[in-house]
Length: 506
Image (cartoon, rainbow, N blue to C red; front, top):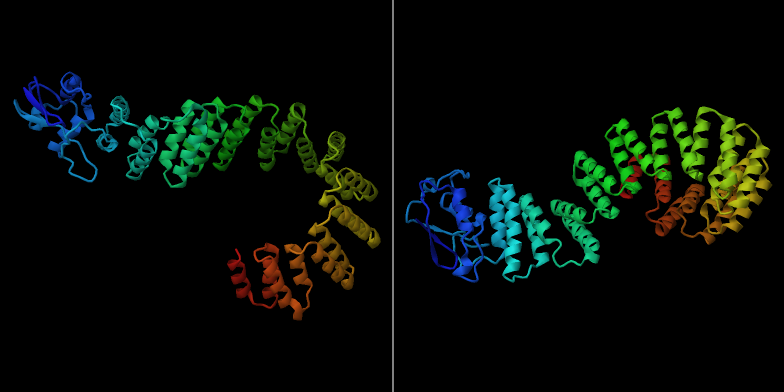
């Protein structure tokens, strides 16, 4: 017979032989004691708490289930005291009531993890929550989440995950699950508790399997704090449950490319094309892989398939780009014409057509392409600039001026158009007209960095300092202004000062 001293101060007798009873058997007998018959406020004694008590009496002993009680110094008619660890106090102290404070259970779970009994960690926390709820203890969700973070800080990750799994859903309405859990995870991540955030995402994805945003957040966490293997496993699982999520397929392919595994990236994108055949982004990503690897024939084949499935303006534009690369001018022209018939407001196709004609010195055709393009896309600044550059090649300054004036009327407050007009006058040695245009430009775009930088470049040596100070006061962090002032230092052969200026403004 062995006596058991329980936390309320009473002693129970257990009919066992210490010389033949193992720890595991003793724990089972004690755990099955129905204390409600005698003490209506006491639940069953958890096995981890008994193991912890035996461990306290034999701190240097390596525990395993086949140990006999006699091996631990327990003999017949001796007393085993149930110890309850108290935060900040004596670990051997015995309170007057069965433990209802969460920290007691958490400590037991931590001890199990420290001993390598991972399965017992999960059982302990689960038993804790069930027991506390049964005796009417209110589960403070925020307290438990903070406790999980504390376990992570102490490097008890399994305990952290067990806590999250058992308490994260308590007190959360079904309609608020996603919002609440994402907020909990983001807060944990922001405060540096990565394992806690990961545990929240893991549990969320067992309940909300089809929520793309949760999969994406979990993937981003793995990307920044996990391994390539863990991220790959998560993304493969994600596209199984959310196959229409383009971003998850693309992330998986990109990670394979970053790892140098082009074959795996191709396989992922091929599978994605089969699952989402009408996804422009997936087809273009597959094309990009082949294009960057100089596999132009494979790129052409992919784009041909893409045009059959999802013939968008971008797909047609990329198709024309590939044909330009391989030197197939007729096919390039055909694709551009086809694209412009379907998408006349997509300015890049007009630009490419104009540039095609310019390459072969068909200036009249190029001029018509730009004019037609501006009819459909009057707000496209690159088209206006390309048109003006074409006319400048023909040395028709009056025509260039007319084009840029019209462009500024249709697109007011655009610094790039003013700058183009100013530089055109400077190239033709019309400094006075350039300065006049600069003055008007500053009135219309007073805080434009590129205009202030150009003004510094145009200034005479005596006026540079004044112009520079004015530019810094208006746009102190503008990169154009910073570069223009550094250029002045460099022109004065003060390289160190130029370097220091650029570093200071970085």
